[in-house]
Image (cartoon, rainbow, N blue to C red):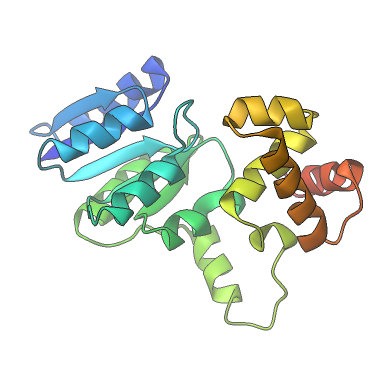
Length: 207
């Protein structure tokens, strides 16, 4: 069994690798520090599972996942993140991911997710299952579920106090492009300014 662990923090990678090898002693585990390296390694051979951080400096886990699926690479992908499930879990599943867990989850949950995904199924936590079930009811979606992945990224950076110029530099986008994303956010979320976006982000734990 061949497994890739992608995370930009060495201590996290080594910790995850240790847990995986303790549970699956025969596993061949390769560690990489970013999304680009993960993509290259996956294209170089046959792999059974990719365990990947959501927030990496070069490409986010979600961006790597979408790229792999666009290339029809079907490797199972488990995304791990510091962000709560309500922010990204459904987006990951919609993009073709096989599971999403937070980094503060119990070791037993991480192992359970691995075992389920390695059988060819998707791992869905109780919270995500309830969220999916609610979609069949006539419950109005939360506003941040209506925006794109990039718009969510911009929203969170606005809420952190960054200017349009600072956001553009961090995301390697033009100032005009970031301004367009901001305008779309205000329109989609029916808000007037950055202050309202920031209050919404704080109230919904979008940090």
